[in-house]
Image 1 (cartoon, rainbow, N blue to C red):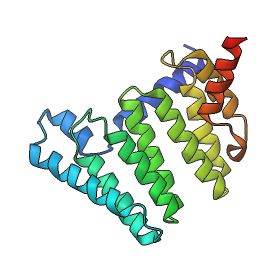
Image 2 (cartoon, rainbow, N blue to C red):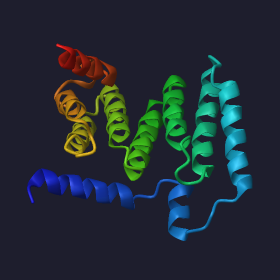
Image 3 (cartoon, rainbow, N blue to C red):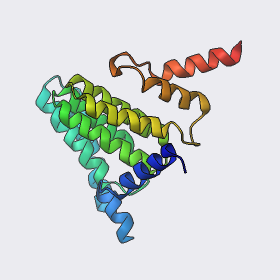
Image 4 (tube, rainbow, N blue to C red):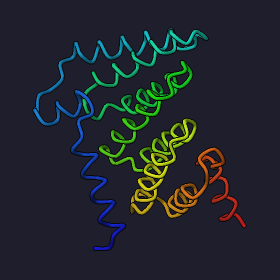
Length: 192
């Protein structure tokens, strides 16, 4: 087993073993989440949506917390979990709490990896790396970049996306292209 394979395996084990939310705990207990809990999650999501467009940073922070809480109350596999975590991270950023935004993006990466969404995990780590770079913590940026590099070797990713991820981790986070740029480059390459 080469060193990259070993790092990828250890990274996966560490993420799977770390506690994330009620969803992770419910999986281990094999207990169904009652319907009132799902209804509470939907209500919190609705409340968050109603206040998130406010320009007030405290309202945005409150909406971020509501989205995060909503994601924790949802049953495992609910398709709203990951978008709620990511939305929460964006709202924390816009509220001025970049540290919590970075932490929440890390949570999004962990959840995405647990559900097999390698691309969402890598994108979330790239966002976290960008936030770490903004605060000048280049050691953390390098750690995130190494994790993205490890994920880029996943057989679940299309080759052009894997290449884009590997190229992205060599750039400063502030100059990295978006996934849509990589998609456009790939479609232009296949059309010629």
